[in-house]
Length: 112
Length: 113
Image (tube, rainbow over all chains, first blue to last red; front, side, top):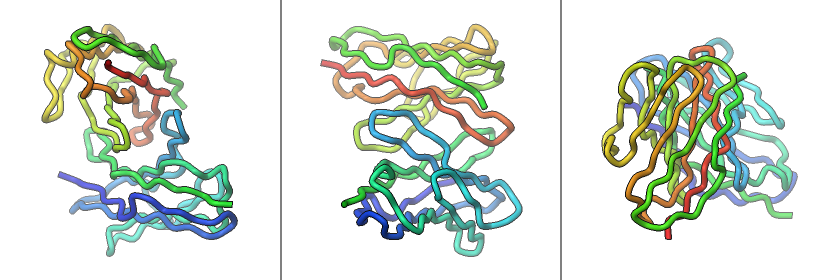
């Protein structure tokens, strides 16, 4: 079965600093990869997705992620964060049969 | 993109009772998914609901505890039966469109006292 590992449960960052949230997956076949954001007391919103093609994927709110097949990673980055980016971030992989498997989540906290 | 409405958005329930959560989608979809998000945890798939057949449950979840209905291609319900405080979670409905992208409802925040 496929699995997703988010290496950091919490990431504190100062405002306007860069951030990287790490995600690794296990799969021997082609996968689709996603990053979702969950703001406090809200549902999940898609940030970006990798389906095929360019390995650098740009999403909403200035986020981007790079698919690295050899390292089975899909790390999320933003060059300069804002207070409003404080949220929980989930990496997910499509497990076939249209089911998503989620990582444990990373809580991003932006400090002024 | 699919728009998903979930009701109720939150509820506080007494242990031993049951709560039915409704999920309405603005387009017809083959499969609907129900997830549980326990406090401070990630999302865990409870079951996949197909229209016209019984839901498919993931390991650790059973129909007696989480009965699901799927009467048509735009609607599904999840019931949390005989609740205990351990059932306190956010329950989310989801659909997949375009073969890949998942959309989620806002979730139902359940507290069992």
